[in-house]
Length: 178
Image 1 (cartoon, rainbow, N blue to C red):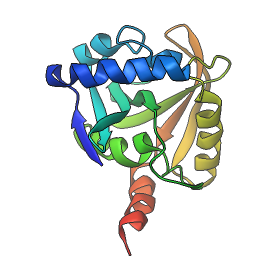
Image 2: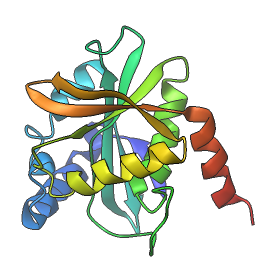
Image 3: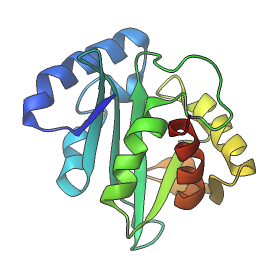
């Protein structure tokens, strides 16, 4: 899996990714405006993951001052349009964003506290309910913990999950060990 920070040279791939998202009904990633690409890039970063020379997943990261001055929101507008890792995984490592993009976000913001948000009542992505459920399961494994149950962030009720980087890397490392 090739993972890069998205830049101007990747805009054609990103535009095609948005078209694919529209066709799949993934509203949060159906256009650069809706995915808040420029807004996120203005004070954070966006990553993309390519598989077989095709952009198949994206995720942003940006400061989250609503939580703390040291807080970074990772996997922002995270979306995957093709299944790469087959089967179920109790550690959510079948998600390209969680498995392949998140390590780059952790590296970039190594000195920050990292948080993932999930919408509680609104599902513009078509997959957020599954992600929200996955976070609950990951909390039982100690990879995330529920930091704020019902926060209003950018006019949307969300759960805020703190990432346990050490536990994440412990589980992630097991994938690389034969």
